[in-house]
Amino acid sequence: MKKFISILLSFLAISMMLFVGCVAEESVAVDDSSEDYSDELYIMATAYAAHPVLAPDLYFFQEKGRELGVQTLVVGPPDGNMELYVEAIEIAIAQNPDGLAINGLDISIVDLIDKAMAQGIPVVLWDADLPQSDRITFIGTDWPMLGVRLAEAMAPLINYEGKVGRIGNISQPHITAAMDMFKIHMAEIAPNVEVLDVLDDNGQIEMAETSANALIQMHPDIAGIAGFDGSSGSGICPAVKNVGKGGVIKVVINDLTPSHIEFLKDGTAQYVSGQKRNIFGPLALDTLFNINHQDYAFTASIENDATLGIYQAPDKIDTGFIDVTPESVDAFVEAMETVIEAVSK
Image: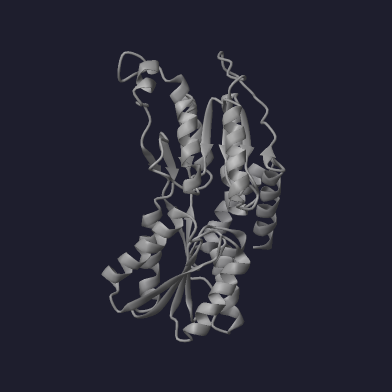
C-alpha cells in the first residue's frame, strides 16, 4: 500500500508541475500526421488546480494535446478562489483559443461561458455542469446518480434504519444535486432512515472534519455519514476514528484519493464511489478538436451549423463510476499501480 501511495503522490507531483501560479505551462506539440495543428490552442480551466482529485483530469488533458499535436494550457487558482477563477477564464477568452474546457463550478461563470460561445470559441464543461449556459457538451459524472449510489451503498450498511448525515460543499450546485438526490432516494429504499440536514465543508478537509465532529456531537447515535466532495471523506473518517467509532459509524464517500483508499483499507470507510477522471480531460479535448475539424454538417455547412447553434457533439457524456469497497480495494490498488507506474515514466 505504501508503494501505491508513493507512486500516486509522485504522479500527483508530476501533475502539479503543470501549474505556475494560476496558469500552467503549454504542452509540447507533437504531430506525426500529415496535418499540422500546432498553432491551435485549447485551454482547460478549473478553480481547484492544485487539488489532488483533479490531477488526472489536468494531466491527461495535456497528454491528449500532445497526441493530437496541439497546444494546451491549464489555468485557474489552486484553492477554489472564485474571483481568481473568473479572472483566469476572462484571460483565457482574451487569448481567443480554439476551444475552452471549463469546470462549471459556479453560476458566476455562466456569462463568461456564453461570452466565449458568442465570440465563436467552442466551450465544453467538465466535472460540473451549468446547463443554463450556452455550453455545447458536459463531460463527467451524473451527480444526482452519485446521490443514488451513495444511498444504495449506505442503506444496507445501517440495516435500513437510523440517522444518516450528509457533508459536502454546499456552494457547488453539482454537489448539492447529489446530496438532494441522496435524501430522495433514501426515502424510497429505506423510509425508516432519518436523513439529517446537510453540513458544509466548503471543499476543505479541515472543515469536513469540523462538520463531522459537530454532527457526531449533535447525534451520538448517528448510524452513518455520507461525504460528497473530494475532501469530505478525509475529514469524516478521522472524526469517526477520533471518537472510537471507526467501523461503527458507517461511512460512504465520493472520489478515489490516497487517503480515501487508506480509510477503506483500515475499515473506517465502507464504500467509495470513484469517478473516471482519467478520461475527463481527453474526452473534453477530443470533443473540442472534433467540433473544429468535423467534415459533416447538419445543414449546408459546419459554419452555418455553428451560426444556428448546432454542433455535432452530444449534449452530455456520462463518464460513469468506479465502485470500491474494503473487499475490492486490494485488487483496485494492484490495477492502479500498473497504470500510475506507466504514467510516471
